[in-house]
Each structure stands twice: as C-alpha cells, then as structure tokens.
Image 1 (cartoon, rainbow over the protein chains, first blue to last red):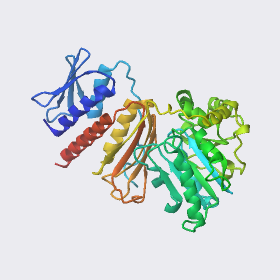
Image 2: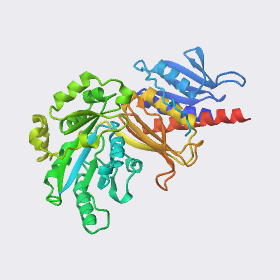
Image 3: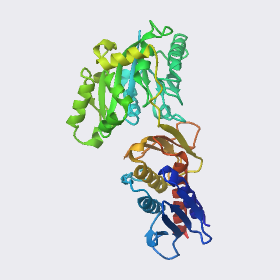
Image 4: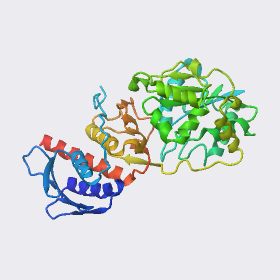
Length: 99
Length: 336
C-alpha cells in the first residue's frame, strides 16, 4: 500500500465518525481502500499510471474518477451522508507565497 | 486611576485585528495588554506588535471561569511592576477576552475586586461584531448576545468583506443594546477616539438583561457555555507546502461549515522559509493568508488552533496528513 493510500485509509477511518456515521474501513491487497457504511460499498483505488486523475472511486458498482483526495472525500461523503451540503470556499486569491 | 478597557466579541469577530490597529496609534503607546485565549495554545499575543513586557497572555482557559481569579491577580501584579519601575508606566489596560467569554463576570471582577479597587477603573466595553457572520452568530450563540448587550461601543468588523452594512443586523444590535453606538471598521481600522470616550462603565445604563446577568454573577456563575465546543491545536514541525495548506483550508471549510467556530494559525510554508503565514478563519469565511517578516518567537512549528463544535481532532490531523502526502507525491512526480 502506497503512502498516499495509507493516508487515505486513515482519513476514511477518521471521516466516518466525524460525519457521525458508523461503518468499516479496510485495505485491499491491491492498495485500494474499502468502505462499508449503511448498505453502501465503496472502493477507492489509486489510478493507473498515465491517466489524468489520481483515484477511481466505485460506489455501489458505479465507477467515477477523482483528481485528488479532496475530490474523493467529497464523493464519498455525498454518497454516505444525505444531510451533507458542501460549503464551497475559495481560500487564496492572492499569491500562495509572499510577493 | 488607570482605565481598564474590555475588548470582547465572539470568536473570529476581529478583536485581535482591532487591538493591533489601536496599539499602533500614538494615543495608545502607554497601554498594557492582557490577552485571554480559549485554546490549547495561545497565538494572539504573538500577533500583537507591542512591548513584550506590557503584553500578558492568559492562556488555555476562559477568563470568565476557570482563570477568572487570574485576571485580578494579573492586574495587581501589573500595578506592582509598574510601581516598581520594572515595566514602563502605562495609563491604560486593554483586556482582550476570549471569544467565548461571558463578559459579565469579567466586568464584575473589574468593578468589585478588592485587590485592584482604587487603582483600576473599568473605562469601557467594546464588542466586535462580524458583519459577515454576526447575525447567524447571534442566532446560535447566547454568549454573543451577552457580549453585544454589555458593550459601550459596538464595532462592526469585516465590512470590507460583507459589502454594505446589513440594516437588519444594525437593527438587531440596536434592539440588544440601544445605548451603544455602532462603529464600522475595515480591516480593524477605526478612529480610537470613537471607541473609548472616557466614560466610566455604568451598568445602570444597560438593558435590564445585562443588569440581570451582572446581578446573577454575584451569586453564581454557570459553566454551561462551553458545552459542545472543543478546542485543539494541530502542530507540525515540517514545513507545509502552500498548495497543501490551501487545499486543507478549503476542505475544512467545505466539510465543517458553521461547526468551525474559529481557526487561526501560524504556518511554516515550505516556499517561504523564515516568513510564516498567518491564517484566520471563522465558520466558512477565510481571510487570505498574511505574512510575517519573521517568526515572532523561537517556536518555529506550524501551529493551527481550532475552536469547533464537534469536529474531531483525529479527522483534522488525518486530513492534513493526507493532503500533504498527496501534494508531495504530485510535486515529486512533476520533478521526475
């Protein structure tokens, strides 16, 4: 399991109680992270090399792609947490380093 | 008599920004400052540009409850050090309360504590109100209502973010406190003379509710106002990439919303060694990071303080680690 996958697994493990959900998170042999929660089965796997996204997220058999962990998190929560309404903000419209 | 000014207002309403502006004014040069933060570690005192000797941080507890007695002790100690010539003479003390502080017992202490009676007089109460989140905060947080109600002056902050001042919010403030003028501030800038008119604090001029609160304090002080509110700090020794910090803050705001009462921090950014970023956020509003010319102390760790309602620390830690790891992976791939 890659370092990013390990971090993703820990993040998912922490996310369920943070969202007040009950479920299980475990790792698969191929590096994927498996989430079982409220009759939903989710598989998050690193994308193969050479594609313009980093993760594939399969939720109840439906496969999607995600360009970042942020996108993974959003997809998973949208699927699991019916009360979730994302609060989108743009933090930095200024240079990310001092000018 | 030395005048004590209480600067209060809910979390993230702009107290420290206002104080920083005031302390740069010539008229505030002879001012001692007491800063109380409700957080695992305190940061505000490092963000205030003033003589170290005249800034005292009362940390990790709320001024109105568990370290309430510390206020009187601290004021007494300040007076002794002033009298002994160990610190510069000051004519005024500004007490910045924590954002969660019930102002009533603080005012009671200033008005009644025997150890400081005759030397320090309560000169005024200034309450900051966030023009962006102020109405929602008043709906949700009983403490914020108290903070508004006891004020001598109300400072409507962040008007540069909120656009035109909302008449409904101004009416609400007027209903809570008809005697306090409402002054607007942009980025903490306000005429100091408009804040502190030199009038002694007079509880009789306040609304009946305030008198009830102050009166009730003589008998008991309820400790129920922190229920459901947690504070913790995320510390990192390794610098954080700027894009990782941005993504982290966006994710925090996206997933936490109103449960993020306040976030503030000093962050060591990989791309700007020696110039830490200062970040502020409250609920879903984040300010663009500002930059310090150098570290304010020997502690060079990134320190981000969270004051939340029900957001687990473990989730925040895992989120930051996961994003930092992914950004590092992407950066490594780009450099191959």
